[in-house]
Image (cartoon, rainbow, N blue to C red; front, side, top):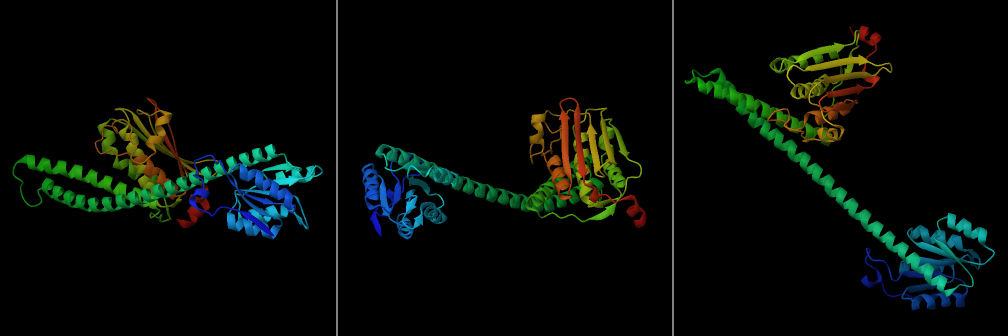
Length: 406
């Protein structure tokens, strides 16, 4: 048997989620008709919307019709256990706030009910003021649940928008860098021909110098475009590693040779220390070269004249490979490291490099992650910077394997 007094589910029946509820949809489940009617009359006088049921099946039917916020359930229903009714209701309405009605002798049952997530309880015969107070608190709890649900929905939408914007940015950067990179390749070739007077004398020597300047600028800008493209591919997961055996010392030497002129111009003291008997590595040599190039480039860029740049490589006691790139340049404070590790995050003037865009460290970190390694950075203003790469031992071939492959 179901006795209903429920308004149609119009928009007025659903309070604004940011407002504290003055009313709630309340389902009363009690096999004592007079008791249920008494609760209904008291709560309707307070402005709440009421539905009444006298057993489990009718309670579920009423709940489906009214979508209650709060359920008052008698623990001692005829032929049924109130907690079973609550469990059935909450299986369909997981946010339902449940209050049990019980007799004086049911204290242990009440404790069990509270442990199972029942919100509160009232002892029969019900005190009207306590009844009104409990429903008011339950309505406030429902309002808070509504606010939380709306907030979570807003956060989810904001996250989706941010992810879409990030994907769009990555796709744009990748397309832009590829397109501009091709154009810069054309400029580089033309400027190179002018600088070399490949098609005959250029006339005034100033034209040759102009060609050299265009060549240098276009080459550097083309390099930046490639970096931006690499960043897009790494962020989108489109970059892959080609695993093969290689000698780390030869990779380090080739990287240092690339920057020899820049180090000479600043009178830097460069040194490489590779542990004796360092075994072959099994990872992507080209990606490793990119990592080290970015790190050595930064070390040179931010070093003072007559400073030093060091590269160390060794196998630690755990069998992991550790590579350190050290300089005693301008350094940075701890709170600036996060900016330096963020794509396009620039500190100061970029070491007086007009093409510095803040991509070296982020790219090195992403390439290290792609190869299964980690990148850490320690720095202090005026004392220089230490960047450490750590690659797990599975990336390192044991001496026996190295000998077998020779």
